[in-house]
Length: 330
Ligand code: UDP
Image (cartoon, rainbow, N blue to C red; front, side, top):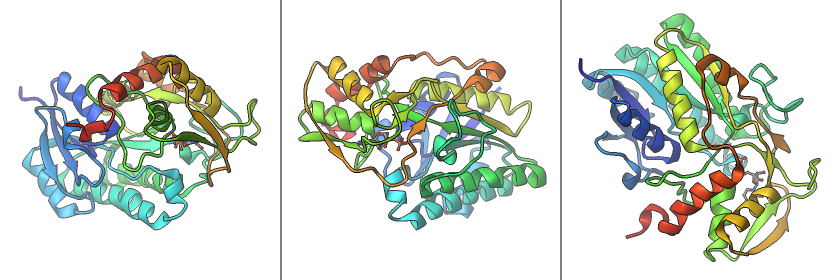
């Protein structure tokens, strides 16, 4: 039997490339769709097939799905910066919301049934309590979260009317690197890579966005989950979609770390010191986001392999030291 083909949008990106690598290891054929506005060709695992196109091009997308007889779509292509989404919300609704709609329409045209969607903890906003479970109220505090929530809300309609089977995976803070692939965004806005740049002397300091949150040390608390563990959850969801649709899972470690604790972890792992300054809050940031991932552990048997922030940071640091300029390095 020939291997099943999975179309991965954003497969040249941070999470999409690691998922693609795991799919290939499991014997799937992988078709990566990326417009390379942020993706890196060097991140793409061999022997993926690469189609350079924008997800808003519904017709070509449907054509690609037919050409390769795609069995399922994993949709990662999206903008991901909370701060930017609060300055340019239209970019987020266009690329993230309309973009996902285009992918869904192409799937209907090409009769592809299974869809795994990268959603986000940002759909919860400031949750009523932690750890956050899937049925809690959804009140995004930033346009990024809203742009993803709008997609989540479309999915049950595509299930009901077009017979799609969908999985919504709400990531908490994706982090860590694999020996082959790492986080390399331009501009970089995420906490761990930024702290590592400060540790390497590539930037003069790290700024803490707000120290007056209602948390023990006043800085925001997040749940950091390793990119390899995120990837393994995607493969489990993909398999489960063979049986049933309408899957919804949080993906986090269940442990919260404050910005100050993450800075300390980088100090320890790297053995380097660097300057830390205080800045005002970043608009749209909830104080605490910590997941309960009990549902996916129970229902799909998901077991994250990376448990502590130190392990996650160590994996990130290892790649960063070998690739100080990211994928651009010669
Ligand atoms: N953060 C910070 N300084 C930075 C970048 C991020 O204090 O230079 C904080 C940010 O306000 C948030 C946490 O670190 O509370 C994680 O931010 P990130 O952008 O990595 O992920 P997000 O939680 O927005 O998905």
